[in-house]
Image (tube, rainbow, N blue to C red; front, side, top):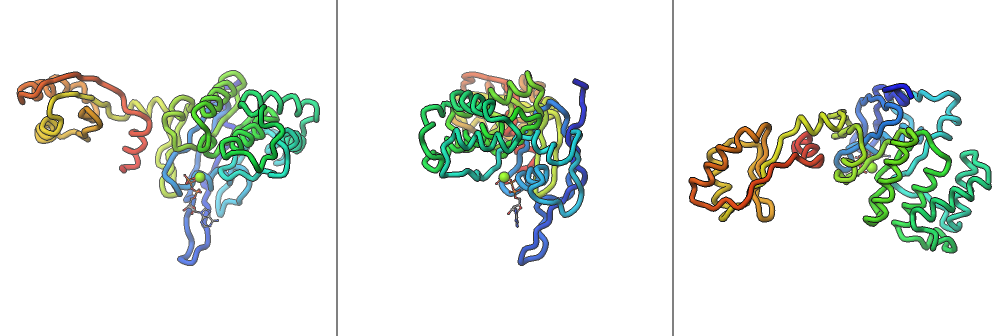
Length: 310
Ligand SMILES: Nc1ncnc2c1ncn2[C@@H]1O[C@H](COP(=O)(O)OP(=O)(O)OP(=O)(O)O)[C@@H](O)[C@H]1O
Ligand SMILES: [Mg+2]
């Protein structure tokens, strides 16, 4: 596979909705490229424009302005048959049995019936749904429905997988199963993956790039390593009398943040390691007892919050 080959190109898309108060800019002039075989995480607060953007990628709604180009041969029908899509809001056929639904969906993507049956059975087993095979979909729990939607998206060996908050209703085992599938598909099959999620811990494990949405704009588009590198580091300190020590540190050092979290003080600032010695000396000379010190890198979650300045 060629390196950094663009598979989707998004050019200046906007989506404006008419509301009683005038035009609402749900997506406001965003552009980005998706490289083949990479995993992209879409993050941002509720209402920041992730789903609207995904729907424009899927051709479900038309941009008010701008366009989406796919570097896949063939017309639009061919292109969409190569995409697997897990929508944010499930639209399932409640009356159907899971296997029938999957065979039907596979058929829509051009799969022959035998292959669809084999794949469906295999996936139902992998996602622990094989014991629900006799149940109508409408009786499924929300997590079971989400799993079925995921399977539906994976059935036809898609080249691109677009998942809109796919883990929301899943239990920890289901989440792990999905993350493993995503890892496998991207690493072993070169599938291009776009996933929106509010769970940074899980994104951190799978994504190559992060797009941070804020009020209809993409404010950061970065590979995950640089995103983390550019962020501040943390020092976690356990002492006696946390309040007192935190106040002393706040007065003496102008750090980005000095917060008490559970049983420790968490200090964060860029290059905090250089201040480490001086911070520890300050604590010791305050008369409080230093119990432990631990340096950690910020989580993706705190990096994102920092960028959003929340
Ligand atoms: N059909 C519509 N008419 C008017 N406003 C809309 C419409 N669809 C979406 N919006 C608005 O566009 C904004 C972006 O919504 P969107 O669903 O893209 O957010 P999101 O980033 O996916 O949020 P979440 O994390 O909650 O899923 C919201 O303010 C939403 O109310
Ligand atoms: Mg959404």
